[in-house]
Image 1 (cartoon, rainbow, N blue to C red):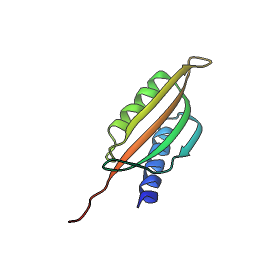
Image 2: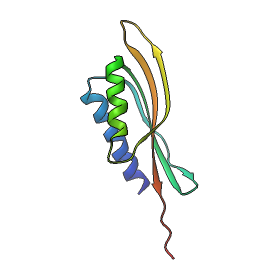
Image 3: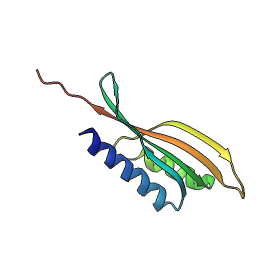
Length: 99
């Protein structure tokens, strides 16, 4: 179901952020949106990280077995050499019609 896939995506993103020691500012689930070919579920993340941590996070998301895609990325310089990043991570749930 869409809810189950959203929960899996949310958990994977949250685990990746925490495992890398990134400061999590905000983490939100988006609603499933119908797109041609399926439904897109997304998770929005706001965090503070070093440049290295941010690259590691992007790499980890790219290598996900769940085929996650960073669909939006906004990075701003923050205090003490950290970056404040906002990301939207999405996953396309392909609909298969019988027939």
